[in-house]
Image (cartoon, rainbow, N blue to C red; front, side, top):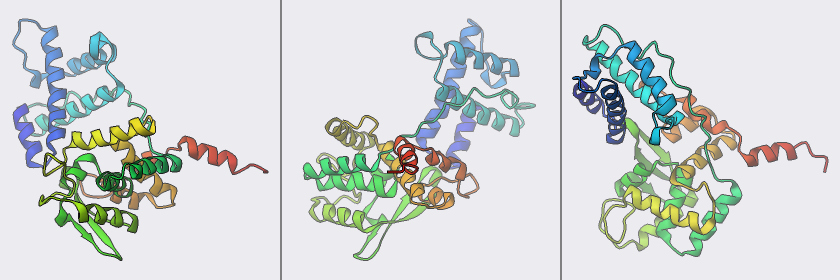
Length: 298
């Protein structure tokens, strides 16, 4: 039954990473169920509502590493995955109902998005320019000005880019095969063109390394980690740069629907997922300082 569910996800175009995450949640549940029924043949697909309630208590008390509680993020994601899995079983008629559906989900982890302030962005770009690497400069600006996910940046091909002096576009294949076409501003166009003009490769991918015709996700993360060490910006990461793009768009007065489309936040029906984008409305330290300064008499 579970393998059928996985095939269902694959048919829907769910990304391999997401599928691996579903499999991890399922294995976590099966391992727990086997641990409380040692020596018995366990059929996790026929779990009851009580099993789900007991598993939730286990996660909250000892479901993490070394017998400690699992993190709120892990708990929340595990139950989201199990709910989708058992809902599929019920819809297919394998079960009379979804045993997860009536269980109150574990508390959601408080999401604290990290983004770079204007000064931190400037410090990062200054350090990149100091290294005189046109590739690194193009990578950092692509994160900051297009808000790509790491895999989207790695998968970007030359044919996905249209660059001219006056305008530019980037065609992005996002999560769940939801595509989006992003405008490329003048700053990023110049950085990309400067890098491509000196790039010595016939690879179809935009970003290449010395050893490969396509930068790997780990390779891109390693580049950003290098600048974390140089700038000492503690929260600097690929995802932080993506967050920065979303936050800066909203700070500039753009509405949530536009930002959702630019970030690639979409619901299953293809409409912009504004709720997901609202995370970028959370004020940062700089925003709070600016708010206080706005009422100063000096």
